[in-house]
Length: 149
Image (cartoon, rainbow, N blue to C red; front, side, top):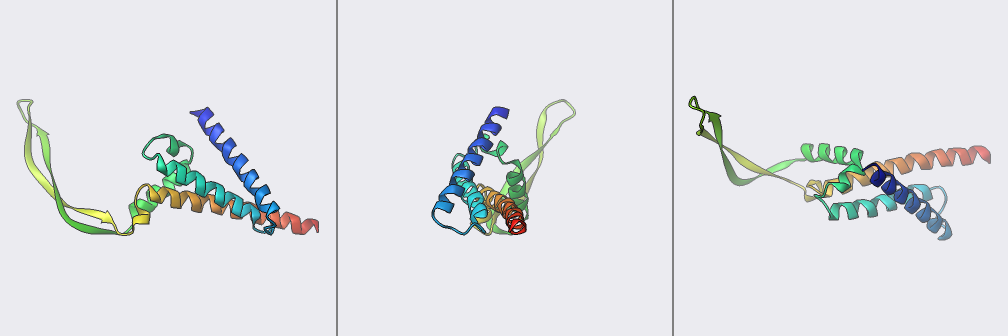
C-alpha cells in the first residue's frame, strides 16, 4: 500500500509539473499557472478514481479529500422519497434462539442535490482541497517572485 501511495503522489507530481510547463508554453500568466496545474491534475485524477469507486484503492490516495467528502455528504440536505424501510429488531431470547421481537420502520431519505451524493462528492471535495493547496502554493510563489523583483 505504501508503494501505491508513493507511486500515486509521484504520478501526481509529474502531472502537475507537466501541466505547469504546458501552461507556461501556452503563455498562461505565471500568476495563475501553479493553481491551474493543481486544479487540472486533481480534476482528472479524481474523475478517474471516482470511475472505479467503490474499489478501496482510490480512498487511500486521498484520505483528506474522502474525509471532507464524507462530512459534506453527511451534512447535505435531504428529502424524503416516500418509501418506508422496515427492519426487524432481533434480541437474544432466554433459550438462546434469535427472535424478531418487533419491527422498526423509518422513512427513506435521499440527497437533495445529486452533486452531493456519493461518489460525486469525493470529486468535488478533492478538487476543492487540492485547488486550495494550489492557491496556497501560487500565493507563496507570487510573493517570492515579487520580493525578488
